[in-house]
Image (tube, rainbow, N blue to C red; front, top):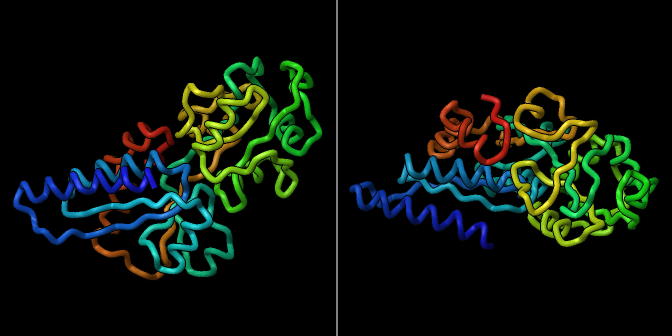
Amino acid sequence: MKKILAIALVALCAVGFAFANGASESTQNVSTDGSTSMEAVIGSLAEAFMIEHPEITVTYNPTGSGSGITAVQEGRCDIGLSSRALHDDEKAAGLTETVLALDGIAIIVNNSNPVTDLTLEQIADIYTGKIINWSEVGGNDGAIVLIGREAGSGTRDGFESITGTEDLCQYRQELTSTGDVITTVSTNPNAIGYASLSAVSDSTKTLAVNGVLPSEETVLSGEYLVQRPFVMATRSGEALSDAAQMFYDYALSSEAAPIIAGAGAVPLN
């Protein structure tokens, strides 16, 4: 709710700007719905776009990738947001994906954890219960606490696909947002989790994977292995509204690239 209110406040400021400059009182709306990992990217893009186009309000509903895909399928939003590629059955059901940016999935631990690097195989073994104590990978003696996202999360789908751990992870907690994962790991010295690179901060430690830390450069080059796309999903064969098309085009433009990078993701343009 706080996230929706924050976007709404930006929208109100934009509308106020429009009135002050003699713009029409008729405001056009663009609704987006989906991935919580895309909050920083979509929020930044929406804010910049509404400053340029005060007659248009862009809203963002952080429901998770699966819910966002369903929302756009059912016509409840203009653009669905997914932090994973669309599945073949979703495309067959009438959706088109457009990759907006790439994002590293950061492997995070508590700041007090001395471990700095894990291999992809070690990460898989940790999440499937083959490695259960931090001392097995060079850390302190302590049972590893596995934190992850809920079923249907694009971050979880990406993480499990890359590590080959689909339906095998032995989570202690399955949380419903990127922010909740980061907060939980930051308060538990034995926890490990995964989160969008665009969302992590110094409240947790980000691990190298196979000796490579996630960054814009290593994600774009492919050196950092744990990465996934940020996708805009639209209904195939159905034109967007004029306002939604303007926002869609803006998000993919070279003008938007530094905004996306500033939000922690890797623009493709």
